[in-house]
Length: 136
Length: 128
Image 1 (cartoon, helix red, strand yellow):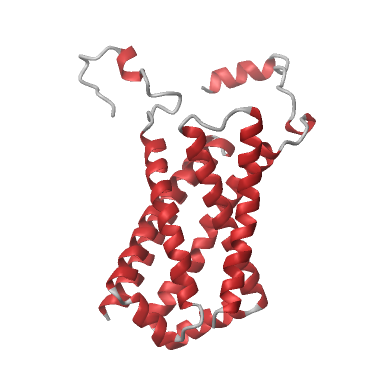
Image 2 (cartoon, rainbow over the protein chains, first blue to last red):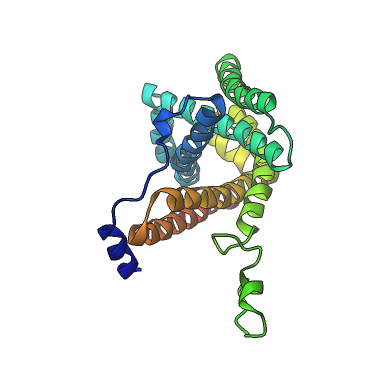
């Protein structure tokens, strides 16, 4: 591998494919990267679930610390983002399952599915938070 | 997956396995866990909404019940497998060389530890 790399470095640089930024932004493109970002966000966000479970299984003091954090403004913001990332990734995942079974890849449908992911993700987040605040 | 017996031709060893040499096994696991997580995430969200206004004892009593505990452990296991493969594909896309090996190892360790910690805590809620 090393000799190949050294040889290619001496030659003039290979032509590059057009950069991402020259393309017109499309909704499928945006929702593709947002899906991945949400997945990565959930990867970190699951630490919140781990904290919750460990605190609940430890003692009342540990649970109170978690409770205080999640009820703070920052805690609520993190939880809101986690909820949105979960639902966006969930609907994005359903969209990928539809695509992987061979449906919805044609021009109008793939855009509808991408918009549906965005709208359903935000919509369900707001509904769940409304239920959370309404039911006491 | 790999067969080194020498009876198989080199072509048959790589055929259908793709550029990653892993075949479609990983994709299948992502699909299976994804379908499971569609259901389990919905259950998880409803469960968390139920716990939202409970105190410490209420949360412990609810999560100590068999059905919530079983569903929670299922959610954790499916979720951790799914996120390990997802982060693996992100790392393979963006990280190169030796750093990739370290990142993949860190990913595996993080996911394994997270799974053990969450399952341990969930079971402890049921058995203490």
